[in-house]
Amino acid sequence: MIEYLIGDATDPQTPGRKIISHICNDVGGWGAGFVLAVSARWSEPETAYRDLHPNNRTLGLVQFVGVEPDTIVTNMIAQTGYGNGNRNSHRTNDSDSTPPIRYDALEVCLKKVADYALTYNTSVHMPRIGCGLGGGKWALVEPIVAKTLDKIQVFVYDPNTRERAKHEGFL
Figure 1 (spheres, rainbow, N blue to C red):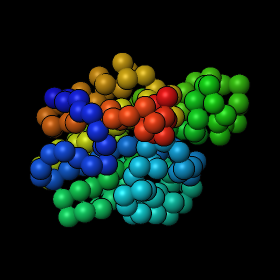
Figure 2 (cartoon, rainbow, N blue to C red):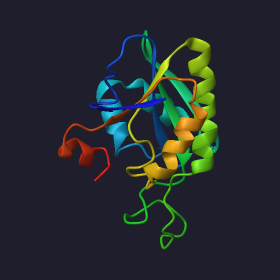
Figure 3 (spheres, rainbow, N blue to C red):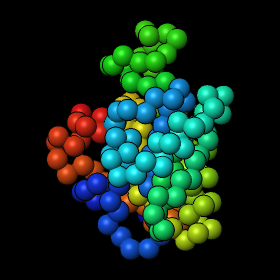
Figure 4 (cartoon, one colour):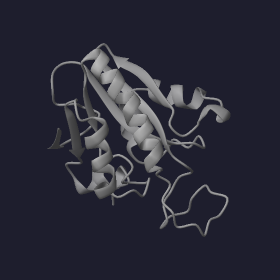
């Protein structure tokens, strides 16, 4: 079940163990969108991502990074390159207007998150993953989230201000 909240996905509003999930790209870029909010709170997720050898940043990979005793951040590699069809991107073919999100890789990642959440009895918290700089459509992402995390309490956060939404790549 997905519950929508207004607020900051890096500051979950529920008690208990939590996973904060977000999408990363496969080229090593970490410097725009939701990752800025993650890095503003914790250094560990960015460090773990940057420590990956470029050959290991493969679509479908999930890093589980402990940031607090009851909180894990998952860096999910479900985006190829960065930017979207309306922005400059890190791609071999800049005329390609296909968004960087890879829905099949997102599903693979979320299945891994689901296994972890069920094993450790955690809720999952996220922004509208893949729909900012990843260029995805929530109408396509939401069914993947609902299907793969169907047995887990999921909270999707919408930014509480237009400025924050712009900062996280949603505007």
